[in-house]
Length: 278
Image 1 (spheres, rainbow, N blue to C red):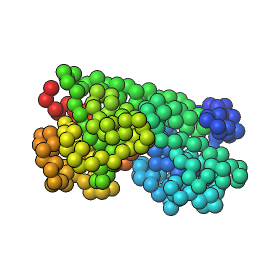
Image 2 (cartoon, one colour):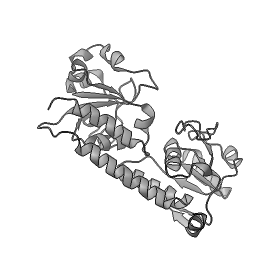
Image 3 (cartoon, rainbow, N blue to C red):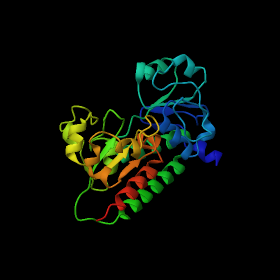
């Protein structure tokens, strides 16, 4: 097995070429951390950022992906660093220290997730495991979506990022996931041309008028929102989703990442949609 792994190098993915299999990987992105462990590269990971909460065995540190510190990262003596943002030009900073960096930005569609898993598999010597993971995800997601009974009309939904009513349109990754179920996103009208990058802030009045059939909360952990807090909001009792008890509290972490656990997100949406009478 080790010989097969060694034979896979040098390896190139994105703009990174590694001469040898990396044994000291630093992940500054929670999604990348999940991907690395899911493809069997966990033992090669020596440090992850402070937001990498999954899996539990990930070597969490005080390193930050939001305020990256090149010296602190270099102190881990990494032979590969994975980032999802280039804040403070960290890629250039690490490049000057001759530390290879894979840039794996937030996915816009599922194919972006699959591509990143493949890139990580290539660079870590786990190409076969990465391919197997992608195939497994594709199969599971396809089965879940097809398992939801067909309906004559489309359901509408509101996806809440925080309690100030920021949402995500169909142009976003989360929007593409919910779009698999032919759902109509009530936030689309608030950002028709994408000027707000797919993340508009809605008004309570507009949301109540839109009357979504389903409400998905991606702020249950961060902001303490729940079906009970939504039901208590002034005027919201008139919304179909509230009246029919169709408020779904999602796991914030899963909903905000684009790694292997997106399958769990798809399942949560499928369960909610399936419960609505056809």
